[in-house]
Image (tube, rainbow, N blue to C red):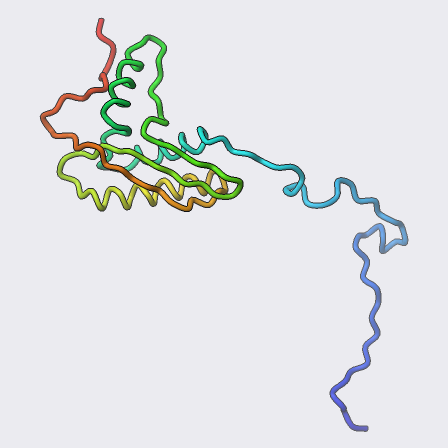
Length: 161
């Protein structure tokens, strides 16, 4: 007998579940993977907070926002019960699967702005993508000021008595 390359195999129908193997019919509920049931929307402010905190974590970033925003923020921070705005200097545009970010930062004198910008981008992209699942398509940075060593901070250190 010669082998023609074809094999004669007998296939048995596969059972999807133990109930079906026993001849019982299984009833599936819900219609599939739970992860595909419904949709999740993420507000711009959520992405802005994540990006703001991630940018502030980078060494060499002194503050976020332009001069006017920082001045108003410093006044707001002095109000009893006021909290520091983590979204200051951050603007996000959030779509269904992607987001784009604009950040305005103040860097400390003596640091490499190019290195700080690269590290801010990497940190922001990693944090936003990890926490939201959105693809970050761009992170635009505007360096609005340099904090000199002898300049006083516009933001208060504590409450005066």
